[in-house]
Amino acid sequence: MASTLIPNTQKKISSNVDDRIRLVGLGRNEILFHLENFGIEKQKLKMRTKQIFHWIYNYGVRDWSEMTNIAKKLRNELEEKFSLERPKIIEKQVSNDGTRKYLIQMSPGVEVETVFIPDVSKTGALCVSSQVGCTLTCKFCHTGTQKLVRNLTSQEIVLQVISARDDLNEWPTTQENRKLTNIVFMGMGEPLYNSNQVGDSLDIICDPEGIGIGRRRITISTSGVVPEIVPIGSRTSAMLAISLHAANDDLREKIMPINRKYPLKELMQACRDYPGLSNSKRITFEYVMLKGINDKPKHAKQLINLLKGIPSKVNLIPFNPWPGSDFECSDWATIENFADLVNKAGYASPIRTPRGRDILAACGQLRSESEKLRASDLRKLNKSNLKLLKTPFIPKT
Ligand code: SF4
Image 1: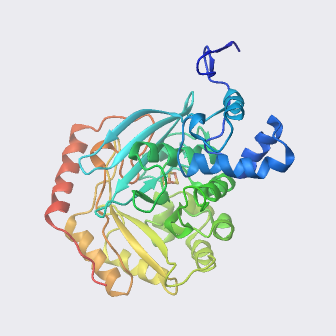
Image 2 (image 1 turned 90 degrees about the vertical axis):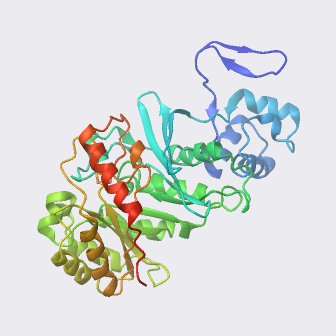
Image 3 (image 1 turned 30 degrees about the vertical axis):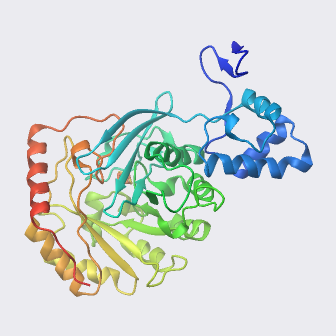
């Protein structure tokens, strides 16, 4: 590929595409591997890797000239070969409630959605994707209508975090300027169908010399890929969330076909076996409230029975409509009643306030080829948002 050297800056620019190796998003071992191939002396390899890792993940540098503890000549040589470029954010939408949704192009045809959800104390969670599309077809989920394009690499998962931190302007990493404090793997895809890359990405995101997000602040959410649940807990020490949505096999099979492969009995056993499970490390069970489907008192009782003996909490999620969805959100009184029953049985059961619904960034709404909501869907959505604002629910603990 043709390339040119610009005399003043010594920057190597490709005439078409930047064909340098992108170091951002890689882990220590990969950076070391590339530096070794590049020709860094053996005795300096670890030191150089540490320096570059720190500049990338603690300072978020985008320009080699900022790496002031590396000699200028070497920096210029490194810049010839390695890039600090980020993937392109091809669309950014900001919701009325401050939620930010990014459409990031990892490579041509590979686009992922990532959502930053701020909370009241100016901290927030980043909802990252682990796959483009999904092989599962949970009936209430918009991503489930998009065919799997491919698994994301650990680098592409980390790049979602880097891109959000760039946009939030929170480099260098300090406790004071941190807005992105938590990460949830609840974006596009089933993380446990991509366990290795998810595990590797956590090693980079949690490294205390870089971004340094604690493992207890990272939640991996699964629809119930039973064989991978205990291994991912041992590998990552992350928190676990289960996309449950129904507490009996018949109903769960209807709305989550994965239940045919891994029925509730097996799923609950894997939850009981989750490493480090305790009252301070509870499993979160996600339960989307679908009108007339899973929201009756008998369903709440089934749920309570199912959770017996498992340190857990239940997140009740008012259904977020998307174009073409068949479901409706349960009425507010029904949701409250359901929450009350679960709460009285001793399980925290907050009702999640939908975030970013107006930009299709809420739970279950992600899909990279975003479509506009039908006017009727929009009316339903606005009606239920209004209700949520009027009737704040504070769970009894
Ligand atoms: S809920 Fe998760 S696992 Fe189910 S279709 Fe959506 S993205 Fe896939």
